[in-house]
Length: 86
Image (cartoon, rainbow, N blue to C red; front, top):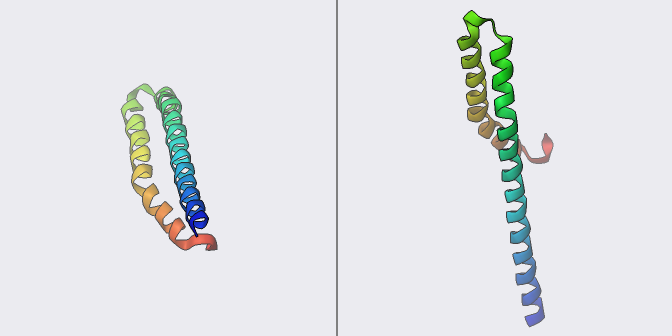
């Protein structure tokens, strides 16, 4: 019985360690994507706009980023609750 309990606690600890590692890897990759992609999209929006409309282009770009940040958690929650059906 004791060997079985040790194996269970060891496998549990391994699963937690792997989960934490995957979460940290995801957070680092997401952060790097924001660091590298943010200035590029802002520059594209600013340079593609006519001088008179630059502020509107930049505000629309920021609105799109903010809307995506607001909608993404609800969409992901819906996909996760649907499970494998999607």
